[in-house]
Length: 77
Image 1: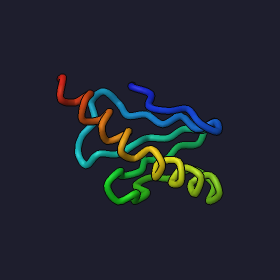
Image 2: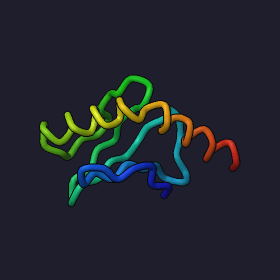
Image 3: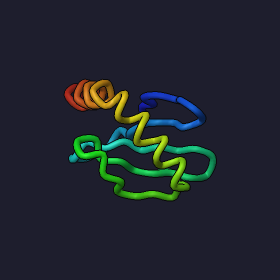
Image 4: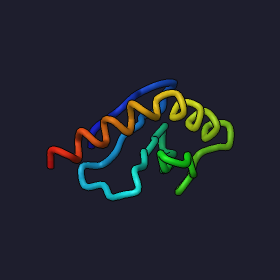
């Protein structure tokens, strides 16, 4: 489970056996969400509205980096 970023208590990661479309999992405490990278569409969400808004903002700032890391990781498999 490659961790991409830990910021403001949120852990951004993907699993080693992921599938398209590119997406990011996010955890904070016992809550989690799954966000599609290309569209920033929330696929699954068990976070409070304020938290999911923070998550989207952080992903927007790091989107290119997250996509690059996804491509690098899965091109070596």
